[in-house]
Amino acid sequence: MTVSTIDYQIMWNRLIAVVEEQATTLIRTAFSTSVREAGDLSAGLFDARGRMIAQAVTGTPGHVNAMAESVSHFMREIGPDDIFEDDVYITNDPWMGTGHLHDITVVSPSFRAGQLIGFFACTAHVVDIGGRGFGPDASEVYEEGLLIPIMKFATRGEVSKDLIGMVRANVREPVQVVGDMYSLAACNAAGDRRLHTMMTEFAIVDLVGLSDFIIDTSRAATHAAIAGVPDGSYANQMTVDGYDAPVLMAITLDVAGDRIKADFAGTSGMSTFGVNVPEVYTRAYACYGLKCAIAPEVPNNTGSLEPFEITAPDGCILAARRPAPVSVRHVLGHLIPDVVFGALHQAMPATVPAEGSSALWNVQISGRPCDPDSGLPSAEVLTFNSGGTGARPNFDGLSATAFPSGVSTMSVEATEHVGPVTIWRKELRSGSGGAGTTRGGFGQIIEIEPRAGYDFYFNAMFDRVDHPARGREGGGAGEAGRVALADGTKLRSKGRQLIKSGQRLRLSLPGGGGYGDPANRAPALVAADLAAGLISSQDAKADYGYGADDD
Image 1 (cartoon, helix red, strand yellow):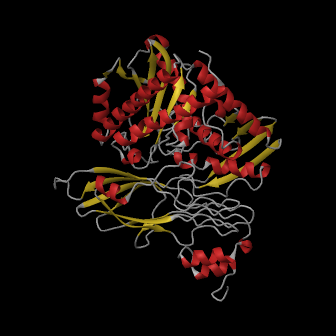
Image 2: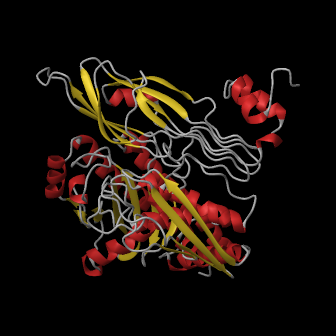
Image 3: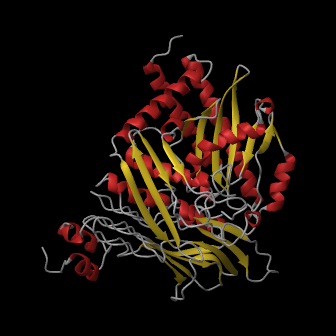
C-alpha cells in the first residue's frame, strides 16, 4: 500500500485523539486529586526507537518534555531481550524521569503481530512517596522518599507483588498511591487499544513511515521558525527567592541561522535544600518557553524539540547532581520560561509577556489529630494554586492561572473531601497585578483552617515573596507574595510549619508584571477594573492618574 502525505496527516490527527483518550483514562481512574482534579500528568506515544511522536494536550510541559527523554532510559535499562508483550515498566528516578520522586512514569511496550512497534508512556504526580513528604527541607534525595529504579511493574501481565508491597510499606497514603500506579498502567493500555483500532482502519503494520513523517515534518517546521529569529547573542538574568539565599538564574541565547542554543552558564550553584533542579526538567521548561514564542503552531514531539539545544553547567542549581535534594524542583523550574523570555524579548520585541508569578503555590498539608488517642485518622492533602501571569504586549495577564505548568486548581469541595481542612476564603487579590498599558494578572488570597480536632503541618514551597515578577517595557512589578496567619503573623515562604487548631493559614499569591507605560492604559480599562473591585481608587490614582471625576 502506498501512503500519501494526506494519509499521514489524517493518521497524525488520529494519533492526537489516541493519546488524548489515553490521558482521559488516567484522569477518570486516578485516585489522587492532583491527577483527577488538576491534570498534573502527561501521556504520549513513542516509536520503536524511543522517539515521541504524539503527546496529549492534557498535561504539563515539565512532564511531557521530560518524558520525551525518559523512554530511551527505559529501553536501555530494560534491554531489548527483556521487552515482552503485556509488560509494564515504572520509575520515579528524578534524573531519568521528570525531576522529583513524587512523579511516577510508566512505560508500556506496544506489539503488533508479535513485533514491537512502539511504546506508550505516562506520568502522574502522586500525593505521597514517603520520606519527609512533599517539601523542600531534605538535604539529600534519600530523605525525600522511596526511589523506584527503572524496573518492571508487570511482566507479561503479572504485576509485581514485591513492588506493590514495598510501596505500600513506605507511603502514608498507600491506597491512593498504589491506585494511581494501576491507573497509569491502565491509561497506557487504553491508548494501545485505540492505536491498534486506528492501524487496522488504515491497514498499516507498523509506525515507521508515520513516525518519520511526523518527526521530519515537525523538525523542518521548527528550523524554519527559528530562522525567522534575528541572529545574535541575547542574555538575561533574574534573581529569585531560593530557600536560604537568593538564586541567580542566568541565560544566554545564541541564534545562528535555523539553530538556537540556550546556555544557563552563570546560574547559582546547588542549594543544600530541595529546590535543586535536575537538568532534564530544566531542558523541559526551557524548550517550552522557546517553543511557545518561536514555533507555537508546530505540534510537540521529538522532531520539534530537537532543534533547541539546552545546556547548563554541571552542578549548578539547574543541573543538580545526585544525590541532591530535588523535591520541589518545580519552584525554580517553573520560573525558567521567564528567564528565557527576558532574553528572547531582545530578539523578538512585542512578542513575549512580562514576568509572572509562574511557580505554582502548592500546599502539601499533613492533617494530624490534636489528641493521638482520639481515633481520628491522619490524612495528606495536596492543593495546587496559582498567582497571576505577566501582561502580554496586547492583552492583560491572566489571573489565578497556572503558566507555564498549565495545571488546574483543585476545587474547594474536592480538597475538603479528602482531608480535615476547611477553606474559608479563595478570592482574587485586589491590586496585585503590575500596572502597565496592559496590566499583570491578579493573584489570590486563600485561607485554610484545620477542622475541629485537628492540627496540620504544611510544607511551604513558595517563590516571588522577596523578588516579585518584573514588568516589561516600563510596566510595573506585580505584588509580592506573602505567607502568614490570618491574624497577620508572618510565616516562612519555604519549609515545614505547624498550623494549630483554631488558626488559619493565609496565602497571598503574587501578581504578574505589567507591560508598557501605565500612562498609556485606556481609561475605560482602568474604570472597568475599578468597578469590578480588582483595583482600589488609590491604585487607580497612583498607578494610572485616574480620578473619580474622569470620564
